[in-house]
Length: 269
Image 1 (cartoon, one colour):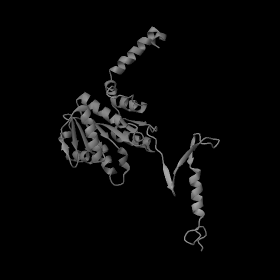
Image 2 (spheres, rainbow, N blue to C red):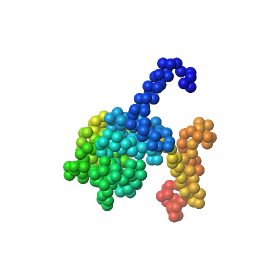
Image 3 (tube, rainbow, N blue to C red):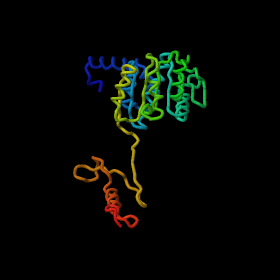
Image 4 (cartoon, rainbow, N blue to C red):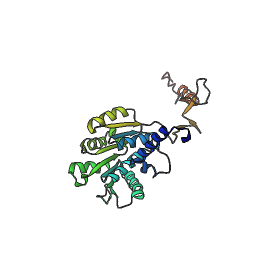
């Protein structure tokens, strides 16, 4: 393909490759044996440009890659990164993953049950632990450059959401926030709020679900697909998703059937 390019085009392409190799993202991408998705690259580039990010994508799509890039940036820059999760089980799993990559000397863990290498440059913790550190004015916050808030959609949780809100508001201005969320309907609105309280925040939304989600209904002794995809002609060859007509028919039959000697439609015996 390069043979078809003019000398000027080859020179421009070479400069682009050199610029790409000079970024922190280039060596980070080499750590993985797969190509990053466009939304992951976009979020990582925004982070390297100094922006905060809100990444909203389906479960299993690889949002944590962006959080791991924040860890990579912190270590490259000689700063700290706190990786927060809503529950201890997730913290333990993430701690194990990061130890395998960076070594036990660079990664710590803080939960209600465990305190391991708490002064490491990368510390995995529950969000409540970070909230308590902020209110206590902990010296561990010195040198903090990045905070990853995994499952940040917990902000809308009636009972625990205040913890996420308090952390986001009270983090020092110098800290870059990486917010990872499942798909939410108000991502842009959420991003505007983050932009107000945290500064320049890029919103990256991906709706592609690499792991298909299939929903089923058990009726009697048979399991039905909840939805069917149909084209404009009504054939099942893909297109618009509609409720399985067999389920609709069963529901209508059930609603028209007398129950316990009483006609439910008329309320009479």
